Length: 406
Image (cartoon, rainbow, N blue to C red; front, side, top):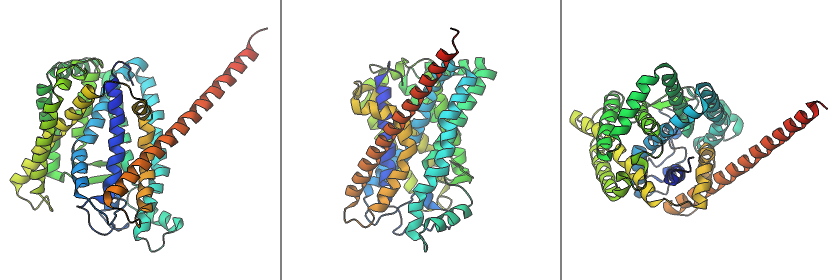
């Protein structure tokens, strides 16, 4: 993370906090049914909601709705933002090699081991035979291999590879388009309008064709049918700004976006309220609702997504300009926390099912425990990796000394 822009480091920490909080409160949404979803029956909604508790609070529905609109868009934007510097510094081959070791391989390892471990808790809620052996038989009989939150990793890996390919095959086009978007972003209002428009072109046709909620699976690879192009737009927007450096005017703590953060907060609340109201008109059956309602709800999503993303960016740029020890730790460990937290969170939710605490209390315990344990595990992993690297370097040094001519 660049030391030039401390707020962006803090934003990374805030983002991982929100990710853990989002997954921590899912069992306590008032909108979910009273009973857990059956493990073997389509549409396998336990993939999104592994645990359902009898304690509920509607406030968590509002929080999750907001994050569903904005969180992943922000994460793809940040992924694109830091890609140009990494690509330019390492070169295409080294960049792709590093991305494989950092994202590709961890994706497959997490999917192979952490995802089944997490969903074993979900299986036990409705299983006749709750044993690990029975779970594994049911797991292998599924028509997909659920990846959980790790779906983000393979998609961002593909987008990074695509950026590297464009960098190699069409550098002039990439540079020209990036310069255009970056100049556009110098005016936050124009950037908001352009981002909303581009996102609408990418999102609305797919949402109308497939509904905003439907997912598809191919083994461990899954994606939401309405959003792949929407996320591509955000990745490219981040890439364009990142290609001009992290001192771009829209990323400055004294820039126009940061200075007007209260206005962006108001815009985010207003657009989110509009999206929520319009979307409620399409419930419970999107395809059976009025066509005009579906179009309005689909058009409201890109606006709400752009406003919410720019709102959080503006708040962090303006209000989180100083370094904090905890935020620094969370920022530097954010990726490993993302990999590890889901399994911890799901089993904490499972352990609290029969505990007599209200929804807010349970969610607070899960969030605090999930974040703390994931951070601790990440620190242990980091220390272990450093030990291995130092030991390997020392061995190489010893061999070099032995092989030197005397």
